Each structure stands twice: as structure tokens, then as C-alpha cells.
Length: 112
Image 1: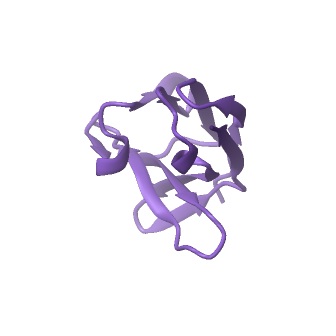
Image 2: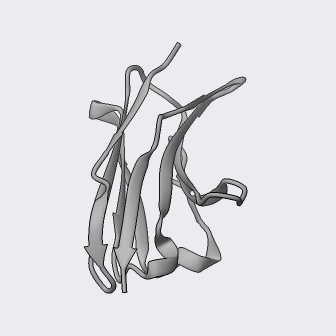
């Protein structure tokens, strides 16, 4: 069982920046970030594969950057120009086929 631990959430003003971290307890193939607000489904934010391929939701393209440090089994999500609509609980997701793992989430709140 791989454990994922997120950190870096918090409260920031609109236009500000945050960096989220997700550290896995073991090597993992792909790492990604999803987010969820109450009453809505969890949605993809960004994914990075072991080969460095990245996928972003349209709503965050140009503002968010996902990266990874395989030596630390850690993925990062740099979030710039944050907007109030980015407010959500952000979850780290790891996948090494056929298993998928989730972190417990970290709250990001963007004030207007």
C-alpha cells in the first residue's frame, strides 16, 4: 500500500500563488492532482507521468505547473494567478497499474 501525503495548501488572495507537494511512500508511475468542492464531482487538475508527460485541465492551463522529483517520490503543483474559483480541496492521486492511491487532501482557499 502506497501512502500519499499532501502539503502546501492554505489561504491566499486572488492573483497570488501557492505550491502544493505530494510525497509518496514508494516509487509510483504517475502522479496527479484533482480537486473537489462540496456538491460537485472531483475533477482533474493536472497529471504527470513517469516519463514527464503532463496533462492539464483547460481551466488551469497557463497558470498551474506540475512537476516531479523522482528521487524524492514527490510531485509539485505550482499554482499562479489563483482565482476564487480555484478554491477547493486538492487531492493527490498516484497510480501504478493496476493500483490507484489517494491522499487525504489539502484545502486551498482563494479570497477575492
